[in-house]
Amino acid sequence: MASERPGATDMQPLKGYTVVTLEHAIAAPFATRQLADLGARVIKIERPGVGDFARGYDTRVRGLASHFVWTNRSKESLTLDVKHPQANALLRRLVIDKADVVIQNLAPGAAARLGLGYEMLSKEKPGIIVCDISGYGGDGPYRDKKAYDLLIQSESGFLSVTGTPDEPSKAGTSIADIAAGMYAYSNILAALLQRAQTGRGQHIDISMLESLVEWNSYPLYYAFEGAAPPPRTGASHATIYPYGPFPAGDGGTVMLGLQNEREWATFCEKVLMQPALATDARFAGNPKRVAAREALRSIIVETFASLTTAQVVERLEAAQIANARVNTMAEVWAHPQLAARKRWRDVQTSAGTVPALLPPGTWDEGPRMDAVPALGAHTDAILGELGLDAAAIAELRSAGAV
Image 1 (cartoon, rainbow, N blue to C red):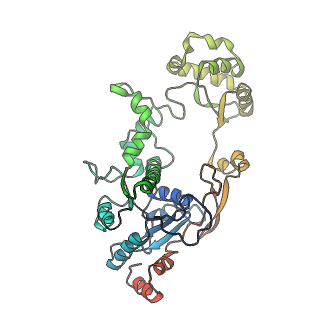
Image 2 (image 1 turned 30 degrees about the vertical axis):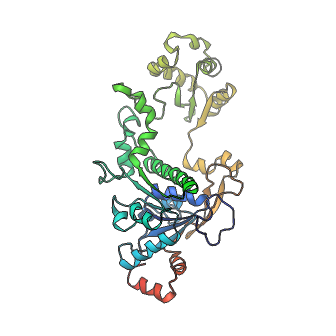
Image 3 (image 1 turned 45 degrees about the horizontal axis):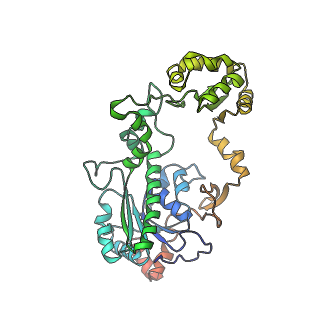
């Protein structure tokens, strides 16, 4: 059965479920924030005085770290030195008494050494769900290898197909962490559904490598049985052309994409104003356009050179050719579509109110959008739930346990 979450008022899908998480950086925090979005009570265990080291990544959000603000709203922060015997005993009690789910992305084997592995916990609490997130998984020759996001982008082959012909490039976001966080989230939801049917918990082993390799399946299959992989083509599509950014005469850039021969003919006639190109043998079919991309790019750039960005977009829209602006972060903050759909909400932080994007999707009750916690903000309240009075908490604090 799910444990009660004190103070919950809205009926949300995971209301009444409690998640205890030993997390840092991005992968596990992103998974647990999404569980919190759905109404779960998420108790984040942090090191006293320091906390999740993502708190110190930068100071871009009024003194707070951008990664931390993104992935930690709607959580409760409990400071515990998990290696301290008294703190460790309290953590185990918290898990046994209250947790439906335990998530951790500590070093491989660390959670088990703390007594928080699935094998040990499930003996006392058969319904517990334990999700371990690591770089390479719980076994195999790479089990103990350090794994950060960029390293996994490299190991998974992602870098080999991303960037320019001269140099590979990392993704601008922590894509390996995000992939692992998404699979942790979906696996936990599946485990909760399974538990509702069987009463049994589940051990979930999430690997960042496997998560990003799954997302790399298209280039993997493109290079099947030793075939050449997709080339690195910057912001242009590697295997569809024209599909990418093109400069206009006023210095702006327009992103456009074609998906079929009907669109190619329309593009030639109504955008390039050169209908004869549609039957040019050099460009007959996508494979030939990809092979002749430099010649075709020259024709497109020459045509756009006499037009402003707005005029290029006007032609593309009239021809119903897919296009987009190459927006900056500032332009995304002010994006008219996000504003029209009312996708922004205010979220409290220790530095004041900041805007936050609603989670994708539409729910009748709306997602939970509570505060980003200050370090240890909920320590006394949670320890009070475990029966500790103010004097006992003060003693633990003086001993460095909380």
